[in-house]
Length: 185
Image (cartoon, rainbow, N blue to C red; front, side):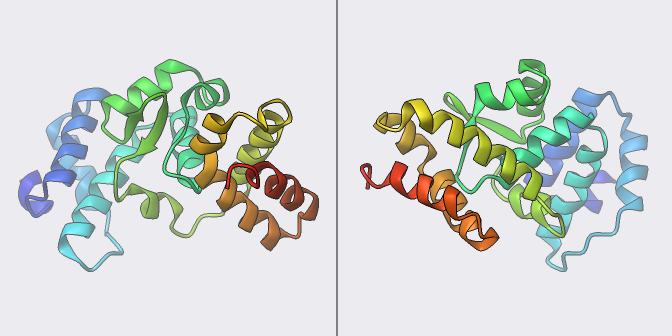
């Protein structure tokens, strides 16, 4: 019945199976929760993933949700694992999210399962998470401004934050970010 409800979409079935396995939900409880959520998406495959994601998200702790939100707020493909773990409850949080299949190792960084970023970003204000990432990267740049490997790993986040900071009118941050990536580019 779960498979029929989710249109037999592999990604959705995988999310639900992992949520059941990791959180200890019974199949009946998972089915009931899935049936109560009405997806906004019209495309059947995307609606199935949206429904499965909402089930899985409902089983997460505050730190687990925070870590996911932080990765979704990032402009790059991935985020530094150690920093995320320091901010959001340690390695047990990242490991649980990996066991659920929603965060993937991009050694030594973490990235979201493809397709989840829009679900996490939809209708949400992520300025707090972007400010947190900006503060972290600005602190790191004070000592690692000439570390090309660091800049390469963070380039997507640095460029995204550069444009975001400009849109926010944070001109000192724009200048600092521009100077940091200039030698790399």
